[in-house]
Image 1 (cartoon, rainbow, N blue to C red):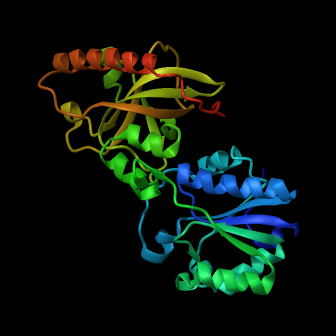
Image 2 (image 1 turned 60 degrees about the horizontal axis):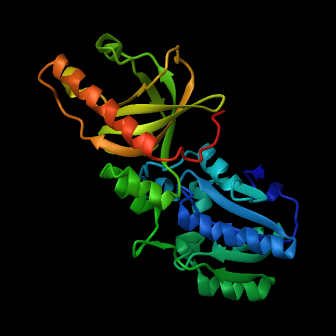
Image 3 (image 1 turned 90 degrees about the vertical axis):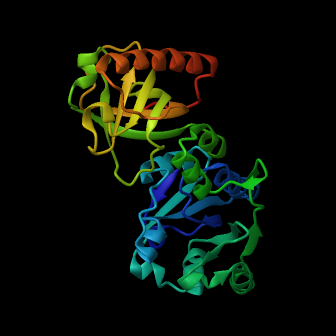
Length: 315
């Protein structure tokens, strides 16, 4: 898959195009992009996904959306769908002011012959480029508009907002069902306070992109991915460690099962499989140790019962 950050830098070629934020690249996004790829291959055209970073709500509303995927993660997930070209346009105040007709003109210049979109799609300044407007522009510029049916799961549409809500509840199973894969976060292992080591359960503290979504505070059974395709079961705690650090900042720390070795400075990816329990304060270190042993036993049971998810090798 080729990658670009400007439409103007792309050589024209007959193309099937879709445009959107695609945060999470969930099952709904995958279905839409799959139709783009299928149509492009049928016509021997180029499949093109146009997306944005930061998310438009950051610029338009000043919100921090807590991304389900970083820009790099989104790029990898889209590449696996067989897309020929991904264009990730920096979204600025100036981008928000581009009129729909002007943006369509730019897409036509790169060779757009077909535009795929969801049923509530609109583009351009103040979302003026609704589907009827885009169809009218298509008659003018010689491209067709195709509307993908909204993807439903369990009687409800699959949307990024639905996945974020599941994560806020700690329901990583529901998030994975909507994503078509386990929800994951990636970070660099940094030095911590060493309390896990003193308790007999050394943990890797992760420095994670501050704008990345996280599941609710609690303890989770995860698969941990290390460079070289190494996989280990892990018990992961997200929260403020109230037994020792009540009121401190939120941390993500992972105890890798059956692992010895130095992880500091290395990238680590956590793939969340199931929530084990909420985070809580224990009366003593001994009580906490007893609970950690139960968490490890339960995590082994869960992770042994489930097939190793088809997750990419870590870079």
